[in-house]
Length: 109
Length: 109
DNA sequence: TCCAATGTTCCAATATAATCGAACATTGGA
DNA sequence: TCCAATGTTCGATTATATTGGAACATTGGA
Image 1 (cartoon, rainbow over the protein chains, first blue to last red):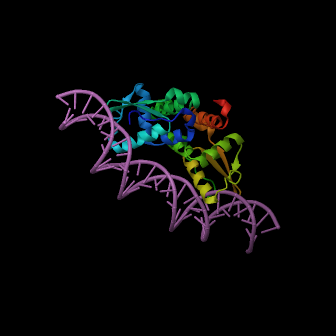
Image 2: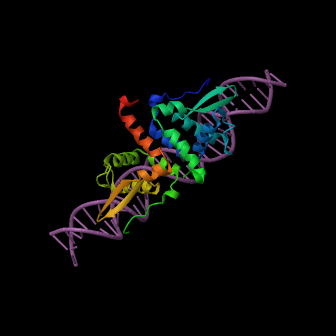
Image 3: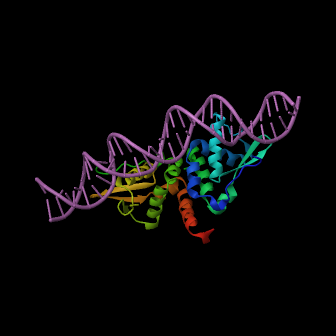
């Protein structure tokens, strides 16, 4: 597989986005990608889990339309499809990301 | 049980909200409650499913902090905890509700 | 050509969730 | 007091997800 397939935004369903986010591991990946603001390899996003488990979660994030993965040599560079999702579902991802900060920082609410 | 217990907003987790919304039946309940803008009985929110199934979903919606249920005689009146959730997680529920309309109305995106 | 690095795929095991019938609890009215 | 109405709880079944080891694919460098 030269490059990985991703769904077009037309076929990205809100409920799949929510489902993908409703898992701590996947949410953590999304949050890190948002904070990084640049492409990260799967290795950089490693969460002390077997590669097969991480790969499983990336697959779900991709099929939900949240993450885009570009093959670069032996590495896979991942990024959030933030603008695209904002366009189709304004505020959803943005507010969720903000809310994750709120959960961590007790002063923010 | 005279009245049903609900979690305080302090213990309402974002990820549980997302999980609760990531199911078509529960999403439909939430959308209907939002559109109704008034308390609805479980019967009014019936989705052609056995009572026990609906009750299961209401339980999850309650424990996630999304729905408040007040016992009134033999009926249970349900409402969205919209303002409270907006306060704690601004924009999340609002944008999701807007997005559900976008999914239905092809002109809106 | 060989090999290490990076992930994916496959598969089986385990865990979690959804479904729904039946029994139960509570209420209000006849 | 009896009963119908409204939901919940219980328990069993089925469906779906997660986990992780092992094998595999692809790439780039030695």
